[in-house]
Length: 195
Image (cartoon, rainbow, N blue to C red; front, top):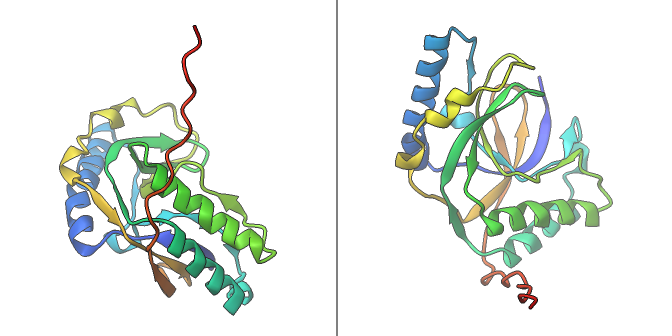
């Protein structure tokens, strides 16, 4: 039982239905290659924004909830599309990676900062937002065949809210939810060309 605690984003039922064919192609590819695959159910699909830790339910306090509410007020609603699937050998995870999405990364950073402002050191910050679809065995060779799975039909995913999720084992319970309400993020500064 993981007893994990983290702020996260989950796809809507419609978005999960559009992601299902990508997961089905993944299952088909592993059968063809005779790889052992542990598939996550659609209700388990999520993007972890910042991983707080295990067995830390006592950290869910009004100041933490208020800090997440403040983060939601600063980040605008946004969309992302999946660029590709990849395999992470250290964990064995097969993940869907979005095209670069600065607002999604800003949301990850904002939840990390909110956690830290409450005196909590998160176990892991998210530097590459992703949705874990399944697990293969750990430490396999590169799984280049994943690049051939078409993710374009999944369409855009709307990030207009996030939740504080707790995993009591086999599912994710939302302890609280916040709607994103920020204005557009400032553009990153551009460096002029040197002549």
